[in-house]
Amino acid sequence: MTLSGRVALVTGASQGIGRACALKLAASGATVVVAARNQEKLSELVQQIEASGGRASAFAVDVADEDQIKTVFKAALGQFGKIDILINNAGITRDQLVMRMKRADWDAVLNTNLTSAYLCIQQVIGPMLKQRWGRIINVTSVFGQMGQAGQANYAASKAGLIGLTMAIAREVGSRNITCNAVAPGFIETAMTSRFSDDFRQNALKAIPLGRVGTPEDVANAVAFLGSEEASYITGHVLSVNGGMLMG
Image (cartoon, rainbow, N blue to C red; front, side, top):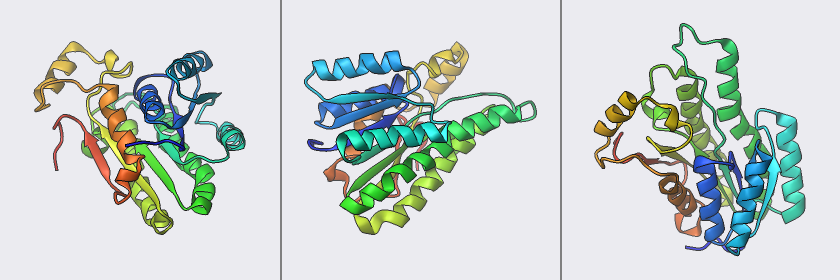
């Protein structure tokens, strides 16, 4: 499986799943555009990719800002001429019981996790249609499939990504463009490190494979969906959750 000659753009690439995706895509031969808010971490990631013989470029962006998204995609397209693979990975949490959840926290999560994906897709869809090839991969969550108390905003945003994935897949399938989602379960990242020990132990009991996932587990699935080998898969949600949710 090779991504040689492809250009991939990953949002939320400075850490966790996004960083692992960027490294895996680069190792598979793709030129990788990494985008996130933290320029310092992005620069370190680019250096690591280039030190391994890969090619990468970094752009600082807050995906909650439409103008910043447009600027970054215009620059990336100008530099590399195309974006073959888009990984919508950027995400945040603002957890609270719904009766106490502030509107600002609802809006922040929906804007970052869901609206940004729609805006990023809009930036690449024209070029992908012209070249009649594209891979769009949205990183959702097991909690977008099963819900989670205290995360109404997060679960809604991730469920929305699943609906967006299927709608886009139907819109562009005739042009050899696929749109899929990857739904991680309990993955060891900075976001999940804040969970209490009780939560972690209860989560492990619900995972048949008996372990927490790694960002690399998700990156492997993303790289596959971005490849030619996945050309007959679209509108699909690939669960990477150790069996936490089946069916």
